[in-house]
Structure formats: C-alpha cells, structure tokens
Image (cartoon, rainbow, N blue to C red; front, side, top):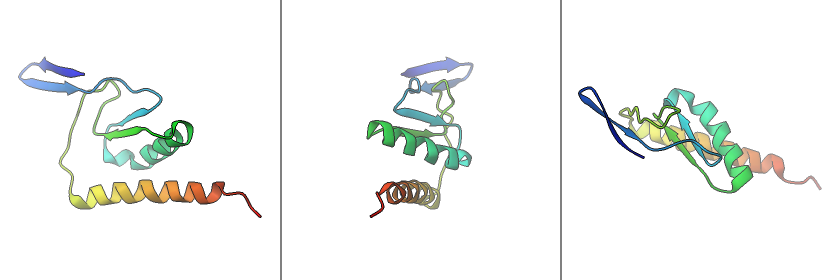
Length: 91
C-alpha cells in the first residue's frame, strides 16, 4: 500500500488482489464483482470487493451516487440470498 507520484498526479495503491480481496475497475463490472464476492464468501467466509481499482491495486476512483451504492448493496445481498436458498437441502 502507498502513494506514488506519476507526473503531476499522486496515485494511491491499496496492494494486491488475493483469494479474499477482489478489485474491479468500475461499477460497470457489478455482475462480475457479485459473482466474485459470492465465491470468496463461499470459500473463506469473509472477503473484500473494491470497485474503481485496477488489477495492480492503483485506485482509479469515481464519484458515485447514493443510488449506485444502494444498487451495489442490493445486487450483492440478493445474489448471496439466492445462493443460500439454492444451497439448502431439499426435504
């Protein structure tokens, strides 16, 4: 983690992806992010998903609205609930 100078711009780097940390370049990759975090949670029980971060850990950043944050939260919770429901044994 750290800050590096690239010309006149400082770029913040949050480290590397691993089995419990996933980076997506934008909220346009929401579907892929939801699939990734569901897989991480299934395997490890906890994990982190970051949007607006390059694969190398450089933060891109973007302004997001409250609506976008709600959409992300809803998409993740609905996918996880659907996954849990499908995983229940049939009687």
